[in-house]
Image (tube, rainbow, N blue to C red; front, side, top):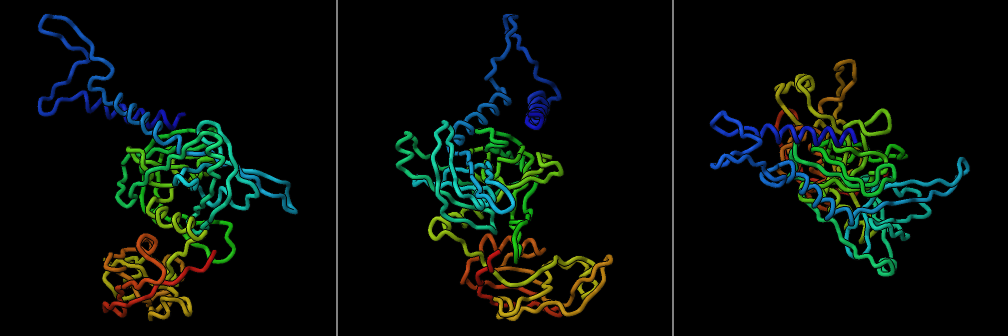
Length: 390
C-alpha cells in the first residue's frame, strides 16, 4: 500500500505542476473560475483533470485484464526429507484452447495443479511443457470444465517489449501472498538486465537476457503474473525480485514478451523449446583489457574467453583466449576473438550478444559474427546449435 501511494503521489505532483502552469505566460490557472456575471464556479471532477483521467485509465486496464489472470496452487509430493507441501503463484490465459502461461518455478515438481479464475471458479490443470532456461511453463485446463463453470477464456494481448523505454508506465496484476486480483503500478526502471534462470540447476547454468526491471510492487505470489503497458498489453511475465528480506524492495523483474512469444508456442507444440547455442564463454571488453591487447581504450565488444570443443563456435573457427593478465587482482584470459557484431547488429558487450542470440537466433540458422582477431576485422559464419539442457 505504501509503495502504491508513493507512485501515485509522484504522478499527482507531476500533474499539479503541469496543470498549474500556462506555457509562455508565467501565470497560473486558478482552481476556481469567475464568469462575466461575477459568479464563481468550480470545475467538475472530470473537466481537464489529468489525475482523474489516469484513474480511469488504470481502472479500464484492470477491468480488461484481471479476468485473464489466474491464481495457481500446486501440491508438491513428499520426499524423504519433508512432508507434502504446496505453493502459490500466478498465471495468465494465453489462448481460447485452455493454455495458461506461468513461471517454471511456480509449477516445478508439482504433483497437482489447480487454477482459480477471477470469479472464484477453481479447476484442475495439466502440465503441457516447461523451459527451465527461460523460467516459463504452460499448463492447460479442460474446456469441459470451463463450460461447466460458464467461463469464457479471454487471452491477454501481447505487446513488443523490444520497443520499451525506461520511464514508461508498468502495471502488474497477480496474486501476491495469495491475494488474488492485486494490481500495482509503477514504471519501467531498467531494461536489458540479465538474471540466472535457475539457481538450483545441476550442470550448465544460463542467464535470461533482456529482462525488464520495474518498481511496480512485485512480491511472492506474483510469479507468473503479467506486467502490462498503459494499454493493458503484456510486456513481460513477472518473475522475481531483488531483495534482502523476501519482500518488495522496489526492484522487480519480468521476462520480456519478446522471449515469451518465442518460447510459449514451442512449449504448446512440442513441450520443450530449443535455445540457440554458440558454445563460448564471454567477457565484456574494458579499457584495461583493450590496453592489455594493444587495442584502443575505446574499443567495445565481447571477448571470447573459452570455446567449447565440438561446439558450433568451435566448428566455425572461433578462437578463445590463450594468454592471462591480472586486472584488479583477477586473472583474466586475453588474446581471443572479440565479437563486435552479430548479423550486422553492433555488439558492445557480452550482454548484447546474449540478447541478440535470444531475440533473433534460431537453431539451425547461419549467423554472421564480425570479430576482431589480432587487431584485424573478419567475418565468420556459424550454424547455431541446440543449447545443452540445464
